Image 1 (cartoon, rainbow, N blue to C red):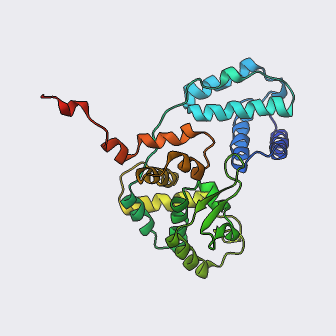
Image 2: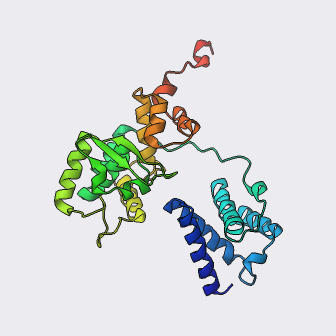
Image 3: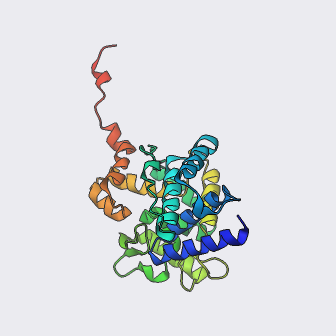
Length: 283
């Protein structure tokens, strides 16, 4: 496919997703998925691609590239949106979604490890970003979307807007985090976003991922953690302190309680309190 033809499709695709009020993160992931899909058929009009060819495309991605079940779901969702919403094809692609989701326990850091990671940042901006993500249990995108007005020091709340599912919510604002953010703002004096890039735009997610990666390495923690592990750790630490799981669900912005219940399986205090049948035996 010619570059201009692909670009036109991606532009129209993006516009329609925006009209239908998809979250920016969903638009990015779907757009990238469609770009990959179109590249697989360089000499064919994509409107003429058959369901059978879509099946073969997915099979190749699974066998050759070993894509995850989660990414398979993204690909199918994006392709379905392209054909059914944009081109009105009425393709039935439900059979291409994975039947079983991959089940992986989240990587959780102890409170001591979180403290080490945050303290390893000498730059107050870097320290403030990681502290905000952990302190509010935020997704990375939610942290970067924060504006100065979202920090409510009167009610000691952080307002999370444009979160996953387009639902706003509030989380408690830590006194220590508020003081750290005040110290940070005295240095950087951002105008709109709480954390801005050099030109006043929203700070980039890649930069934060690198900040966390460097902090993890500097702290000497041997865990396969990512910046999202701070959110997992926040939820687990709340659960271990006795917070009701339904409250944690609200704080995390989870639509389904089942999503939150995974933290019961990584909570050290809960697991350590469980009886061990083998200990009752003479072996």
